Amino acid sequence: MSSGRLKCLSRFSAYLHLVLSFIGIAVVIATIVVVAKNNFDAVEDYEVTKYLMLGYLSCVLVYILLLFSFSITLIVGIEKNKLKLLSPFVYLTYIGCWLYGLVALRHFISGLFNRGPFLPLFLHLLIHLTIIGILVAMLWPVLKLHKRWRKERKISMSTVCNNSTTNF
Image (cartoon, rainbow, N blue to C red; front, side):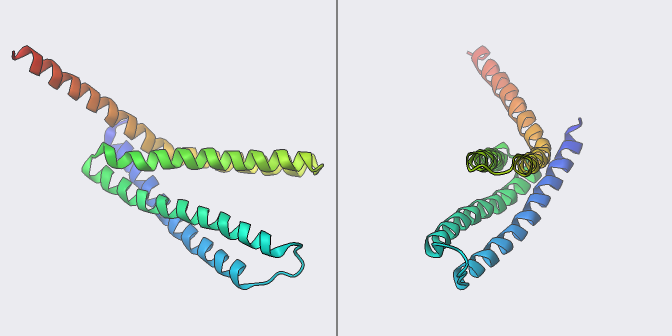
């Protein structure tokens, strides 16, 4: 794949992440407000559940804010051909995929231990794995561009090192 097409796909992925993370920020903030303001009497031990939910939502909000800011640095990195500006986005997306996969697996296993019905749990796991696949597909052009630029950088650095040693 040509470098121009890879940059175009990476730019599309960056803008898509930017829009989705902006929507995610709004949804998480709205959910935090609803959880903090409402009192659900039907839930047993609501106060503990409420604080756990707020903690979880706060962690998700921090992740989405980081994704939003790293999407901006990704766009700038693609425009200016800067490898170091692509790296934070790539690593954060790796971490997000792994954590999302671990949460899905934990949900599936805890459902099995709680004697939940297998088919709904399995379908839930498949949905989560599909979402991870979509995330990886959205990351693929950026990762490919990151690897290509890293390889080109290593080649240019070795050329510079070889030329500087032969001048002595």
